[in-house]
Length: 396
Image (cartoon, rainbow, N blue to C red; front, side):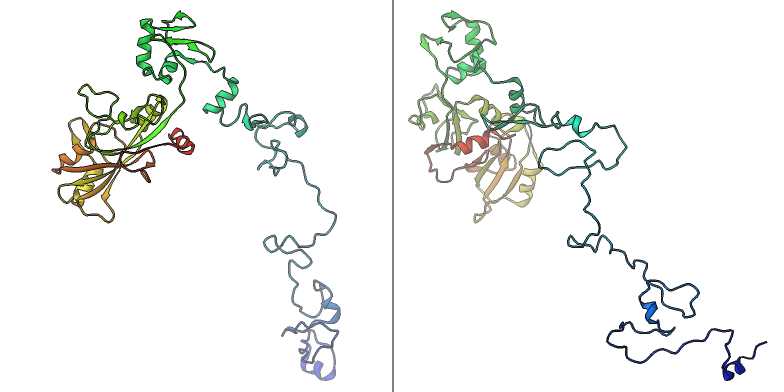
């Protein structure tokens, strides 16, 4: 057995590796500033090496695993220097994209249905692509909206302007489409001097249509908004010779207008008048009826429970009647209620309050299909702007 004590005193080498004392002296200016550890300091040669040599006598700290590598992607920035030549952009393996857009690559390459090369598909437009017509500055052809009205018209080509005869009579102010069909079958309408009795006959801009000894022409679409006063009937003619709303818009235009919907004799507020039968049918149809907001003044205060009953629904003689919203009028008393409905049944608002034991003293329509009576005094009318007509035509 080796005498370790004698080995130290005599200066001999021991079998056990000796520990070196930590270097407490200050490093020189050119030396590294890494502090020495308790396990021994590293020599100058070991500082330049990223890893310690195997079999060295000193137990040195192992170098970082990422030594000599670039930092993780989360820490790199666009300004991080890249070594080597710049990478070439690989061509996209997915579907070709439009010029100027970012290329998209298939998320899983080599899987799914096979795709042809970019050169083979460059001649074909991308799916859903529509060419832009420089004449009318609109996209035409098959595309994502080919099921819409504009897409169908683009596929069918330009229209020749021919319409059905009953629609021509309706737009001329003679009668509604249904009544126009009866006039056609009765043989009282002539086209280019010949009597036409077949339904579905189409006429064009150059055809001459006569009815009642007069030549008819298509009227320009007119849209008049009236703030109806009290004691006027919403009808075009009255057998009892009572005052009608037609007398209020007599000087609005030369075309014959019809009211969209109805207002009771004692009900005031907004009423739309037009000769556009398609729009009138759209606004009054139960499936997509226009919203209407009424200002109701009652004989007594309305409870919150009754306001909730209006929204939940009331059983009337002709079925369930519900309101979209019902609340007290701002800066008003509890006798004044605002109610929003879509239903177009006869006297629906009055009957709903009468079913709960209230009497309606005043009923004023303040909003109709998004139109308000701002700057429109009672008994006055105004023409709708193009923006308002477009808004009504685009309603669902």
